[in-house]
Amino acid sequence: MPQSTVKPYHWANSALFYYFLVVLIWAPLPLGSNRDWSTALLAALLLAGLVWGAALLALHHLSVTPTLRKAWPALASLVAVQIWVGLQLVFDLSVAPASTRLALLLGMALVAAFILVLLLVDSRKRILTICAVMIACGVFQAFFASAMVMGDVEEIAFLDKNFSRSSASGTFVNRNHLAGFLEMNLAIGIGMLVAQLYRHPASSWREFIRRSVKTVLSPKFRLRLYLVIMVIALVLTRSRMGNTAFFSSLLLCGVATMMLQHRVTRSAVIFFISLLLIDIAIVGNWFGMDEVVQRLQNTSLTIEKRDEVAIDSIVMWRDHFWFGTGADSFFQSYVYGGYMSPDSLYYRHAHNDYLEIGSGFGFIGFSLLATAVLTSLWQALIAQRRRRSHLHQGLGFASAMGIISLLIHSFSDFNLHVPVNSLWFVVLLAFGWVARLENRAQEGD
Image (cartoon, rainbow, N blue to C red; front, side, top):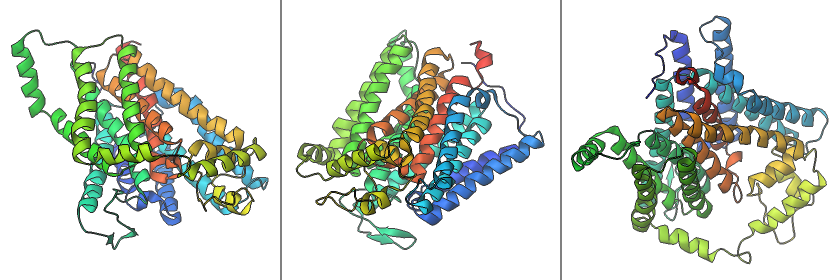
């Protein structure tokens, strides 16, 4: 496996990288940064990191990476989105200027996060480090959420929320937010396992046994246990679309990976089958997958109210198709703009990210965001086909699966309007470019 060159980082460069990791660790803790004060704090921390990075570039302690230069289609699209939101404010297109201003602040911070990943994650060691930190955040949430469900704790002083014994939510406002967060961390963990799969079958039973023993004693086995823990918590969220999105994206990306790499090895087939069978048949049944299935079976349009808000959101987007009502202005436009149906509920979000983004940002902003997402997803898929480095192939898998999972989940929820989940999503977008371009020269492609 080609190895990345060990780089003599300046201490301020390393300090910025670890600062960014600390911000990632902090972001999920205050209700997923889903309050105005925590959103503003998260944005300030990320923008401070970008200013720090700019200073290091000026002092030549940090250099613009080839990955950042070549990721210009996604970066330009993300920057253009913020310019567009700024124009919504300048030309009074937003029906809720205060909400749109906060959306602009968070949007600029997410662009900063995208740039920081492309600037700082420029070696094998840093890829492994940032993935380990993000997986650890997921495992912590899984442990914490599971403990709250299985215990008798109803509230904790430093978290402004009540815990339910019927579903897991961790430090997030509700279970669907936690489900979206776990989906993305599971994708990263599975991607790191994909990077460690044997590419050739064992030549003998002796080698097969040796490999098995080595696997049990290696960090790979611990990582597999971490995935089991996160799957348990995902099931305990009782999130219908969260579980559907995770297992659907796993199946899609597993098949796509074997097709892209033009190889269907026995180890890869066993790995993906074991993920599905162990996590669904064993872990799921022990910890309540049947309750999730029952919720899916009981879902109908006569019971659900989300179809009404979706229909209303379509009308809202149609009436403001090109320019939108203003970023993050859904509640004001829906409730006070005359779009809420008489028998609907007072929804703060559309429970469909596509409709909420479309109606708020308009087709112009929606198209720019879609460009950033699709170009990044394409890079993640191409990395699995063209890279020879197993680590970069695994990172491409993590990026693709995480993006696809949240895109599926977004049809019935609003994870992209939860600050920490939008941050994780942007990091996964950046991972697609890192997987495709980082250290590519050493592989000769």
